[in-house]
Length: 148
Image 1 (cartoon, rainbow, N blue to C red):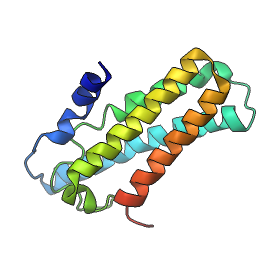
Image 2: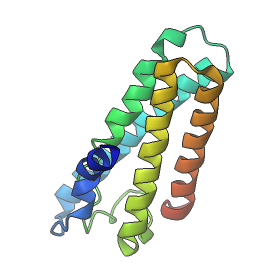
Image 3: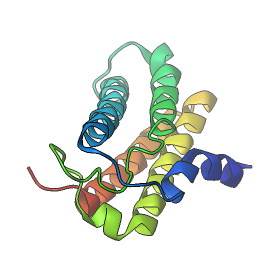
Image 4: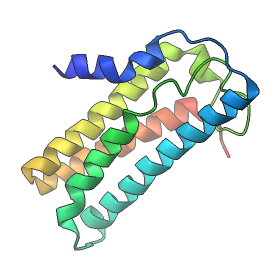
């Protein structure tokens, strides 16, 4: 079932899409950057709860679900040609789309594992799953994102 869900979520990355115009390119970049900012916001909120004793433990599920929802909205934001413009996306994404897709699937799986731990109230499991998600994100950033 998870494989079917992942296939559905990441199918747009698998499909070959035509190259985009400059205006479309900017829209794709803006959209994907917005999605990653959403993920970052939810990640920071979870960090504050798990590691900095923020009392909003009842919001963990909202934030873990928010990460999953955001990842599922990337859609076709990595169409050929969308590497041009104000972006930190490395050209390696388009050179190694299969590897990039695999990294995306790994990040989604890590986010799903965190969400599962949150739903079951397993604090130690939540902490480990959060660390695993961070490692997954960092691995993709190291491989597929340009340095500042």
